[in-house]
Length: 102
Image (cartoon, helix red, strand yellow):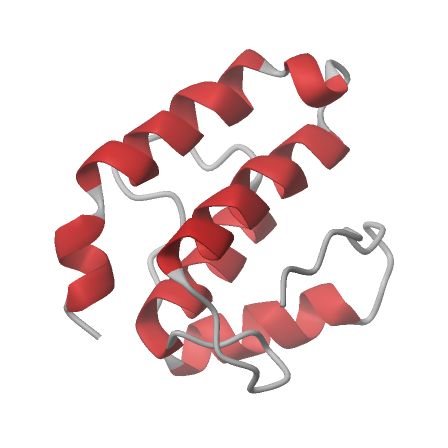
C-alpha cells in the first residue's frame, strides 16, 4: 500500500520518524548534504525495517518513491525539484545492497 500524502512540517509524524531513526542509528543523508533531513531519516527507517512507521510492509520501490515525493513536497520546485530526481536515481540505482542489508 503506497502512502501518497506527505505530512506537513509541523505534523507529529516527523518527530516520531526522528525518534525511530535515532533508535535505529540512522545516519540521515549518507554522502550528501543534509538537505531534507527528515526525508532521509524516513528513507533510512524504511530501509532498515522494510516497514512504514505503522508497521505495514514496504517495498524498496515504494521507499524510494516516497523519498522523492517527500523532497518534492518540501521543495520550492515541487515535482520538478532536481534534487528529488537526483537523489531518487541514486537510491534507485545504487542502494540495493543497503536495502538487502536489513
